[in-house]
Length: 286
Image (cartoon, rainbow, N blue to C red; front, top):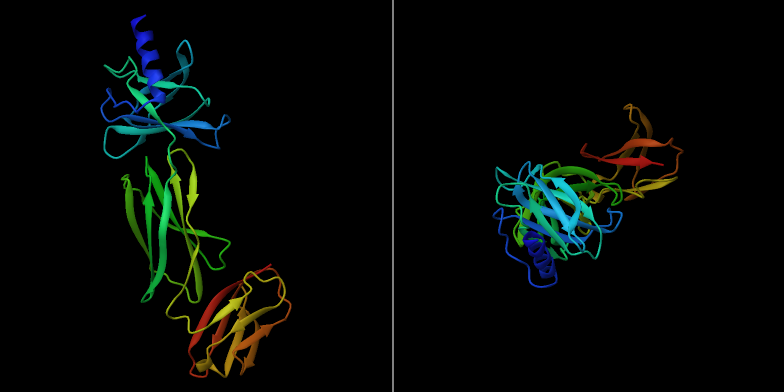
């Protein structure tokens, strides 16, 4: 009876100020909205001992709604995190089967704010691109995936950075394989719950661009190639995935239109100037 009364008092505290963790030290639980859950609500369990079973109590009288095993590593050795879906609008209490943690030890902080990405910039730095951004509201484990695109629509992953888990953090990443021409970048933030947040998309032109571009890209039918003035007269070549030149033409204009039929696939568009300098960009033909 005494334990039940303790749970009820702790559950009532959910609507008040968050209760400091009592056992185990440093463990927290965050309850918020998560669209991937059938009910629309879920709980992040952060900083619990790895391998323990956490029971989630709720309702009147208090009963075990669900249980979850702490498995993933969080921060340092011996602690972990987990995510589980729960019913919405139900005050919850959390207890673990570790020694001294059987009477309800952590109260949920209601309304976790998803991580926010701001101040995202990309700038040429010699032959590389330097990306910088700021993240706020890191309430748990966050992985940042740097993504790159040549057309602003189809992105590929470049690398990952783990979050620092402070209220506000600054991050940077260098793309050492800078492409010639317009390149697009964005940051994908993945939280421990599986929720994802994307930054805005930024475009940058490498310092080696020289005014060379291929558009639209991907192309449905015709496409245009813009060339630097200093290249003229120039040779425009279209090369298929097997390395064969399927088009070769001379031009004295800074804009050359390719109207020749090309099968669907990936091509390289190469321009060679009168000084024998060459620039190449990838073309996707739909």
